[in-house]
Length: 275
Image (cartoon, rainbow, N blue to C red; front, side):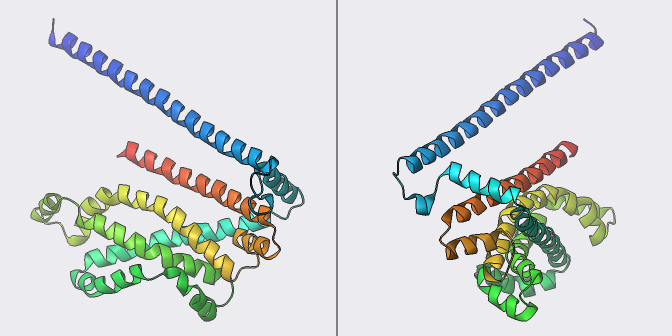
């Protein structure tokens, strides 16, 4: 058998192995999704049954069909979408700005060892503070508007992003950096050619964390100041003892947050394939 034939046979076997792996992965993914939907169906089915049989206090915990009916009613009369749109706008702004500002701050700290050593204790203290408690200060200082809500979100997302991304910069293999330096590369070129490409997966993973943190910041901000948004609906529902509205608003938050998380996961997979 010639070398060309051996190479062709080896390539054919590798393709078969790869195809078998992809097929098993698709089957496993299918089972994962089926299991997820089954768990949700069991959970909501038991909840619905508990509500109808009065095993739970429906005034406090409601039940799925009642919640869906209320959400559909508000969707049809046009009173739900403006609140959803407002919260999504605030969350997207806080999410994007928090990730961007945190990454830029991490780059600044990486570029200056003196600055990093100087600011390190302050960043640690800021990270340990309950950022939600800063909300009233933002309201007084900025005003009771959307900017104070976004500021509350930034207070939660920026520090976490900075710490995670900066740690990723510092963990890049030092040998790669030495190679660039040996060939006369500047610090900026080292960052552009080595540090940043190696840290892209961490930055994208940070986006996943920031999805949840941005929602926390926005909802807390809306609790304090907003007159529109899903956080406002939750507070309003508590005030009028309409707990079906409260749980329905939480349902909407869960759905939109899941969509955002899946979008970030899709971006992460695309970047992994490109790398």
